[in-house]
Length: 449
Image 1 (tube, one colour):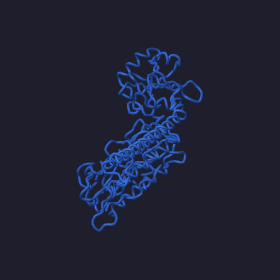
Image 2 (cartoon, helix red, strand yellow):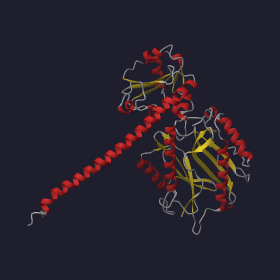
Image 3 (tube, helix red, strand yellow):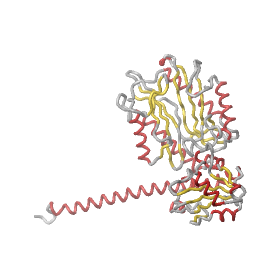
């Protein structure tokens, strides 16, 4: 036997070792890439947090007359602001304490909270296991202490009843008499944004758009076979594979008919002639979106949506342009809502008096809900929406993010004269120039063959 040719029995161990070495190398490489991706995301979140602490936090506290802001939490019962403030581990009780001690920046302390990711960001001046909160507060002598209690804004309402009672007992007087709601501090801090955050928001919007437009294609939907639930679960799988969060849990994939919504994310099978909608949002680097897309499932022989449905969509686009041209910073959300409704009505679109209840008026009826977005799918900031009464009183400021949302009802002959409900919703940022989109918005009805 030639010396260069090994028997099969003797070659197997070497082949196995070579294969094992390749597999180990591959796994190490994949693990390294995943670690790098995780690290890069963490580094970007640190930069967003640093910029917000440096640029946004001082104005949020000073404009609202709060010179100390305390966020309190217990192990396994984190405050809603846990991610915003840097995470970390509290063995029992922990406090993030922000104090205005003059100068350009706010002092930042994490008391009883520790951890590699929290400390590695280097955005806190003090990170200590010391829990003597009363001594810490007394040394700074704040006049007004903000705490996270709110009757409307969920993100500003993280202080539980038992934590509130414990905080009062821990501080005692005179500090208890100086406690006040920090809801406006939270709203301003979360709803104003720096460049690093705006970039992340744009990325989140683009990813949510791509997924929503792909689900309404023949790559995902086969008429007569695919269910609404199948499409929704496909979208959920995209979140999982991309490491994204969901703004509203299960994506709402639904069919709209002449009498309203027919079914949502259910076992209802997609049929030809269906008018489909998706309403959803994704979370990326602490930024969250809320947007919609519309699709029509072509019947045999059709190459476009029926004229009545297309006309309904076109009318909605006209309303969106009115909204886009009018929203500016510097007024309250209520003042802006009144102006928008007046402008829309002046253009010939009656304002619907009660949501989802169109009248017999032959014109296109409209109702708007341009709510805050970005820090969540439904955000904490000023909201040009009837369903956020307190936030209607907040002033619109540059870098506030809005979901430009409207619903338009237009009669369609294909539906026996009944009205087609067209919802449009895409995310934008308000600057001194007005509304500016952060990704390509909905301009057409998607077609499924």
